[in-house]
Length: 427
Image (cartoon, rainbow, N blue to C red; front, top):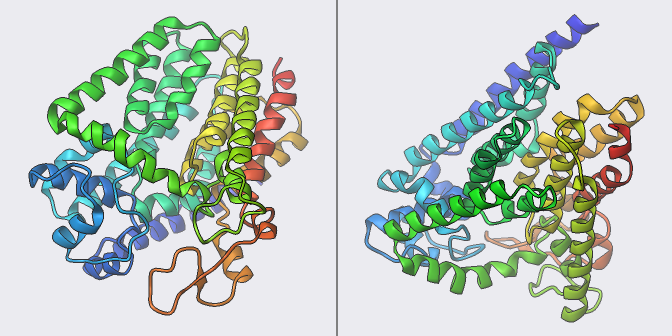
């Protein structure tokens, strides 16, 4: 039976590699200019690349994409959003690629992302207490290659594979009591994208002040280097102009965070969602209370733990809390859920827990709710019309409470199960 599963996993890996190669070949190939014209915001990476190109063109780092994309790629809107939503340190990370045309830059970044992902998974499965077999590793890679998360990584080129590597490195370092290294890696991740800073809560609860100090130092140093190279105006533009504009995405259908769920019900500034009632104060209060509840849950599992399975569990739980509390949690953010599943799978003693956890994880990283949306709305109705013939779809509260929140429910269920039960299972 094990040999059969290994053969099936190997075949799935091979087919998955061919699938990814096909997507890489079709997405950033000779037809890319036309594809970008049809969907200029279809790639997360185009934001950082355009800001990097702005640097070499002596333009403002956060110049509107409605100005830069026509100039750099010969394309015009409409656009989802009009600015790079990522902090200056993320621009610094991709700065050398700004000297290249978009197609080779995109391909190089995809190679970097895939390598980072492979290294991160290898670092996790090689940990002594986990001790995954070769067959299990093949099955893990097969799942990844066929997951919706991998599709998002290949199609859009987000920064998350690099962030995942930093977070995994942080976890590996803390397991060896290298707290300064762990904090520095997490501080670097927080400088590149702000939401990983939530994981500093784990260090605070465990009173690992060296990690906190190293994290703050790494954040300040990386931000300082970014300011020295990109200019202080980049920070003024990002925090003064970009962050308020990015807040408009809080009620987008794909946002699986607490903020996304509550905003779609009570505070929807965009036409694609019809709130039950427009009550911004109620929404803010609900978001604050639910976020505090998540923080309390993370504190509970991390309080007074020592290194070992309980510490691994607390770190994994805090990662899930990070995804819930983040202002936006897109599909490709669920890559971070890979570390919790790989850790917990080795420590859960009963098949029932394995099954429940596997189902929730499958929903998070493999399932794409977009096909349900296509069935729920009339042909041609989409969240954000970009092409001729498309019409604005309006999600009603019944949609928000069902098909638009499947991933939010799975993430919440996983977090609650972790806080309520799983710590007891690893004692």
